[in-house]
Length: 464
Image 1 (tube, rainbow, N blue to C red):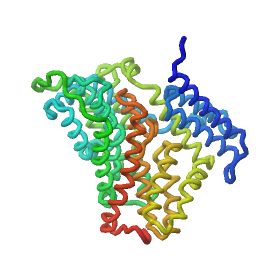
Image 2: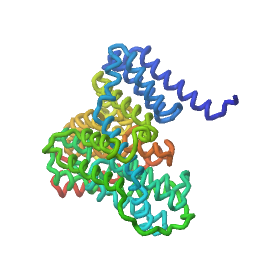
Image 3: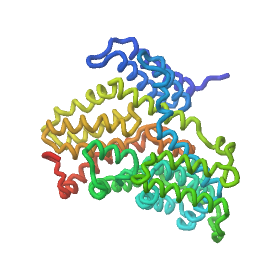
């Protein structure tokens, strides 16, 4: 069998990843880094290299990360498998079941006909409508993961109805926007997801209105500017190549009605979580049970098994385990202090300090994929630096939040993006290109939003 250049390149990346892990295990520990933290940092380096390069499938990298964590002195296999007991992993399974039910019941096809009718056969109009609808959809379905589980099948059906090829530019732009811009609409809301709740807690607590007034402007600006950049990045859209005549809407089928009822009841449970005190994963799993239950459900377990991506589940679980190991071993604190802690030298140039802070946090996020863990590490360090530099610590904490949320450089960094990536419409290289563009846009938006924050009694200089 002939070995191609691509195979050689992937093999080299695999060697680089393993050498990074071996080096971390064998080389003398750096100052402030004990052997356990050094070994965990080596696992993070190996996993990051493989997840970015895709030298092996994502699920295989996840299994390798679990094995490397488990053989690290001071770690155990149960600790390496911690991520698979996380509510995020089970929330993702529930959301995947809801997405599969939307497609199997016919709701995705109905939504696709609605989208095509609204776009009037124009892929460009379809894209613009999607970007414009993201903030409103976040109010209806706060979770970006759940929105993607529902929207991805609908837009896939819409693209098929327009006769647009899966490898085309339109599908790439739509799915990249769902993966990387759609979550920003959630974070503009205090109740929108893990990112906003974790940041608000770390920063001392916010009212819903206070968070929205401060963060809606930068997040919505990033969605619009990111949408424009993405449109330029992918190039001219293809034209619709098939007839887009849409038949009149038929009455809801029984399967569609049952699916809507389950989705509605799940949304009610999420919106009343302050009263029922349920983890978001519980309503998602209840919905999965109902939708998979014989007689009432709309798809069989066997059909769901065929649709569920084990690579997705393994990757999310392994990345959560790695983030926890980084935090508990002290490797995360060392990495954060090494990168973010060096910014104190820029105290006399506050705008430059903020710009470099965005870049430093993006680098930390490469190794710590869990949003809450990355914020838990970066926000306190950034606030300490801000206080020393005479800047507003609260403002710097919000800048960190924007950077963690908006700058995604490889598919595994967020579950919402991984869902979109699994659809097969874009490659890891597309994520990097959009992520680098979002890095620049985050710095620009952060600079432009400073006067708005000052109007809301959040000046750049001074205390929170």
